[in-house]
Length: 241
Image 1 (cartoon, rainbow, N blue to C red):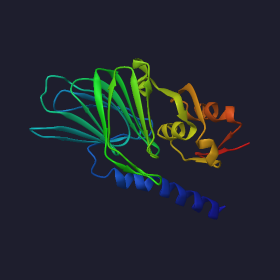
Image 2: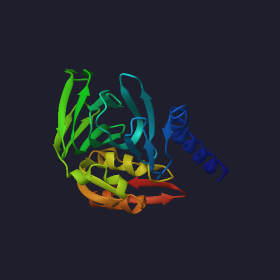
Image 3: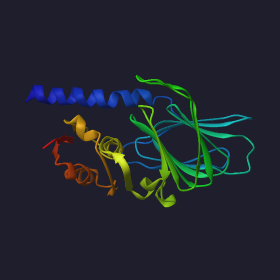
Image 4: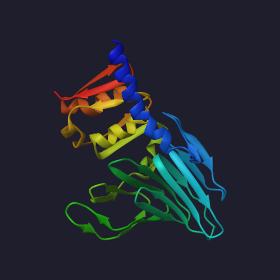
């Protein structure tokens, strides 16, 4: 029993320690299931999602915000001549006055526009297959872009009121993968979620789920694929049929 408890402690430390180190010195940080409003110096407002981290660097010529992890909804005040740029991983979002959501995960960066318009920029990306050219995409209200780690880009419609649906405790999984949905649910669950089947993570699905009950939502996400959810002392194991 002591060995088992020690192993769980080591696993928990290995899971949480990198996040703690990564967030040292970051301007704004939220914890599990916490949402927070951040007022920026120019009058813009950021709604910072759960388990997220944000850096702010304003100067006389620019307004730069870096999303280091998690998710944030930006309501950018217009009338300021300085460009407003949000950086998330290798993606830059440039705006004037608009409202939009940015989510940074291991597998993808997602940008969804509620009102106004934005420019999404990405530098050249080297993959195993080829070197991808720089990307410049313009998104209008009701559009979403998903830039995946493998270099693929998906751009399509999204209901404007569903951009940043997490602010109303809703997980909008429209054409996403199970892995991406689990990444979001992890930020609302205090324990560790382990998936034993890598193929399950790549399955695509669509639906709406309640972030206030991550365990029930996780069951609803993986259930149609025959997988089962086993909570064990704060840890959750998702196993294939």
